[in-house]
Amino acid sequence: MSVKTFQRGVNVPHYKEFSEGQPISTIALPSEVIIPLQQHIGAPGQALVSVGDKVTAGQKIGESSAFVSAPIHASVDGTVTAVEPRPGFTGASVESVVIAVDLKQKEPQWTKRDHTAMSKDELKAAIKDAGIVGMGGAAFPTHVKLSPPSPIDTIVINACECEPFLTCDHRMMVEMTDALVEGAKLIAKVVDAPNVVFGVEINKPDAIKALQSKISGEKGLSVVNLEVKYPQGSEKQLIKAVLDREVPPGKLPLEVGVVVQNVATAIAVYEACHLNKPVIERVLTLSGDAAYSPGNLMVKIGTPISHVLKERGGARVAEASKERELSLPPDLVGKIIMGGPMTGWAQSNLSVPVVKGTSGILLFSPTMVTETEHSDCVRCGKCVEHCPMFLYPNYIGQYAELGNYAKAAEWGAIDCFECGICTYVCPANRPMVQFVRETKKEIAAAKAAK
Ligand code: SF4
Ligand code: SF4
Image (tube, rainbow, N blue to C red; front, side, top):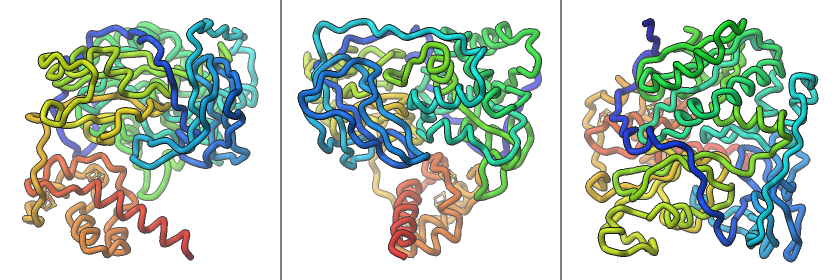
């Protein structure tokens, strides 16, 4: 079997065993959902509803006229109780629509249509109307990505799921293969791409088999087996691994004729075009060594993470102490992360809601979390050796720490896609991703001030 990969990167422990065998299951609705009006890169939506309004699942409740944006929809039937800033997963407050969930919830009725008869423009409009964004975490509006200024010859479906613990894409590949393949074909149709390649890491043999069986005999569709390595799912590394094409620094995949979409996004495209269904729910992985009942869960957008934890028994260590109400004291749960452990965001507020880009909720015991202070760089060179972008994270970190963000940017901070490898391999525990995020923020602020 031929297996491909990219240069550099690291082999990290997978920890997929907690949830990879768990079929997708649905959790009960919360009593309230908090739906941020910005869940995407680009302009935030403006609320289309007011306090007291009755809303139904799938109704558009937020929108912007900007091209780079994505509409927001109610995920449940209910009544709007507030339109106000609420804490989001980055720690910043985000204008949000709060909905008290109607106890008599009706099953949403989606209007099936013949998506194969839809034109490219009709498909793109359906994708935009459904509020689809990159659901692997990047949250870039999909209709914008599918409006390239130059020809695209290949759609690469990112089916790597290379971050430890996360298994939701894996389960979707196995359980929703038809929707995934149809969605990928629709994406290809929108941009006139003759080829679709599914890049799957070989630790998901059942997914590879399901995809190969589904696409058998289909012209232009193929599955590429990939070595298990982090960060194979990042766009530039994936394109190199799958097609052996180099995306130049500072450029986008479209420069080499490629658009990358992830598994959940392709399925959302199918559902938008075939069912006229907006993004009101997603599959995420609940996992971590402290999770009482890990699994792959279908969760309504806006569901507070506290509700997800409560529905699944909370933390294993908390259960042992008969504490099921999820105060999750820090001596029992060392860290809660939204997303994957390498690129996700640590959470201290359990009222934060699940959004379109939430791929996971991870609970780690204190023994799994190293909270040691970082020290000065010892010039071991490991970060340089492993950086998949061929950057010098050591210099980025040193200059950012000194507050010299312009110099940190010169050393490539803007090209860094925050994979976290440099932090992972650094013997001095230097928080490089934090340095990079600070640099990007300061450089953006300096640009805006000009
Ligand atoms: S500098 Fe950025 S891209 Fe390179 S290893 Fe560190 S986080 Fe990853
Ligand atoms: S891995 Fe850490 S200690 Fe080693 S060169 Fe990079 S920043 Fe310095």
